[in-house]
Amino acid sequence: MARHKKIERRKELDRRRRRREKRLKQRIKEAKEAAKKAKSR
Image 1 (cartoon, rainbow, N blue to C red):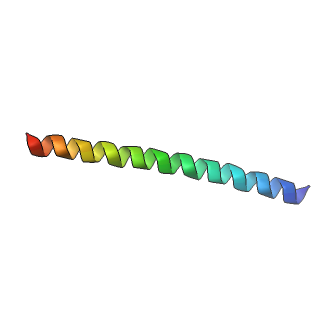
Image 2 (image 1 turned 90 degrees about the vertical axis):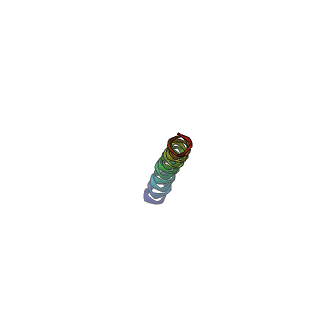
């Protein structure tokens, strides 16, 4: 039982980490596009 809980916890952490990475990538993409717009002006 304890082992099972540990695995579930690891899954939850992985899911959270992936979500955070996605958000970071999105932010980087937006920042790059904003920089391009600023340069072209």
